[in-house]
Length: 558
Image (cartoon, rainbow, N blue to C red; front, side, top):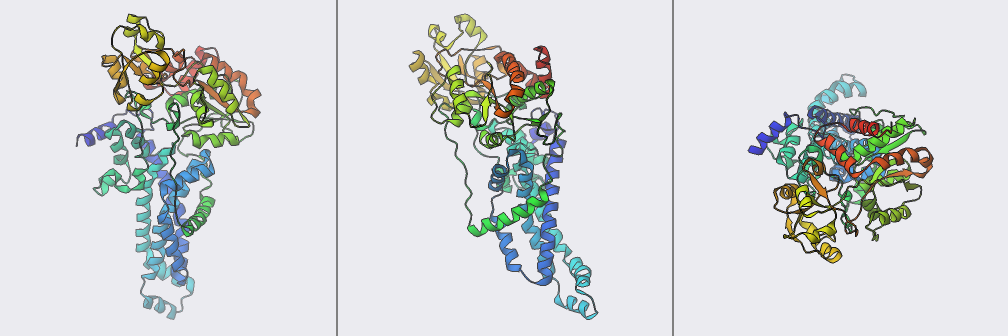
């Protein structure tokens, strides 16, 4: 029971950096629920009443209800995000939840009419009532209890399933579950469902994952990142394709298998719901983006991945462009590379902070370059038509061999090659899979000729390094603990580790407008600067806007 108590304490602690405040998350959660159920009511109630009143089409209604229930909500949601584009994620969410809510409401509407004693309807007609009077004075009032029960069932299903909206970064209570799972944090994972307006654990006595697909959507596998972060901002799961895996393993994609009839019916419902839900073009509870020009062709659209460090860089780009007199619209917190790259290629997003090595391996599965300049040159050639990259920064976000400053000073270490001069036994700490990576112990031996032991430290890698359990650790180069724990990142002169320098991806048609401004930012974006910006976010609790503003001012860029 301790984790339940910890979850309750966490909800009221205010330690929510990196996620929305609980009241705002509840508001977004309820907003998606209310809008989705209202749209479902507008579609299902008239249709159900028509079926119940005329007695026609009941078999079709049953087929529609069964087909809609058979459609996997999470699979449909991801499919719609891919089809509509990442800038239309709210619409995709609403359509998914509308489809989920329609069957219960439709069944309640026509079943309510069917349950009415026919003698009552016949008595009304014998009194001279018109069909409309029979409908509104007899059928609607008497059928209301079953309709209300159907709406209640729809609300319960939708409010439980809205948690999957957080998977693509559009808010709601699911964000706490998603943030907690990679850290095996019961506090975070229970706090989300416990705050829910329809918490299964509070209302039904079931566990949070008893709501089926809504919870399973967040329970996918996730790998730890070489040390447990000390702030929720670091706890936010990175998109899996951001982690340099060298070579990058192909990500398995889930597939949706349904009968042809089910897909046909679902497609018809999606089309009807889209027409009603199309007005929701953005998250209505999100603060308005400064510089947004609502689709003006002169506006530069800047996007970001769904984690704090990338969003800080994107905000820095956005403010620099605004300082140069350009109109900017922000589309931040988008998600994974295979979701946002199509939108970049279509020109829906025109500026996006990326990482050279990861992007190269995404675009070219056969790429072998690892050194910074070689990776950058290969990336320039691999860019899709209509896109290009500007100057790469010296700042990186990649694996590294890192040691404590005391250890570095003792053996005069500045590069990985210097480890050959260490007189004591070397032990490398990192995630378990590091043992078989090309930049793990085997890679160190084959490339640098250095023998090193290995300990799978997982979530506590940095803690073990500081404590001396291991004397070398695989730590991400943008990790703020490099500064706060006084660590030293060793250089990699032989390119053993895949280089992933920060680089802006842009549409070629705006290159003349933005190149000088963004290249000036890139020139000042050093490894130390990026780490310091992340420290301001995780330790000082500053917003991305404030961090970006200070960085530009300190470097004379605004």
